[in-house]
Image (cartoon, rainbow, N blue to C red; front, side):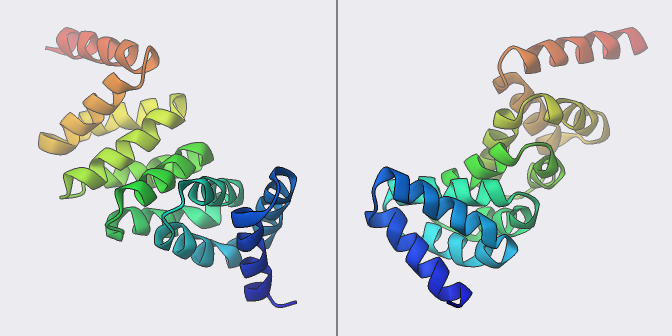
Length: 173
């Protein structure tokens, strides 16, 4: 069976299968790796079924590295906020390998793109703290503010890092 047929069959199983069949379909798509990334993103973007989108985001998160760049591009281009929310969640689940591309999106000229990147970085947590602090040191304006707000929204970890950052800055003056 060719990859397109496997992908179509697995997506259909996620759509209509039992819970066990859905989980097996996610594993099957993830085993395809990079070959499944673009077709999975296409279905995730085109479908409005959030249950299906959630499972497909799990596929992308499991694939990991090869899915990062296509998801980053989709976050910038796809108009559907729900689809972008699932893409951001998948990027956040991938974790540290997605930090630098997401940090890059904090300089994007569109506020919504920056917001989805910030959500993913908050989900990543600790691995994003130092790069966000570095961004605060090396930028000003909107990127600086986005880095600070992302840290602030990160929960206990981020505000503590921000407090230390501002104490250090004050001591440097």
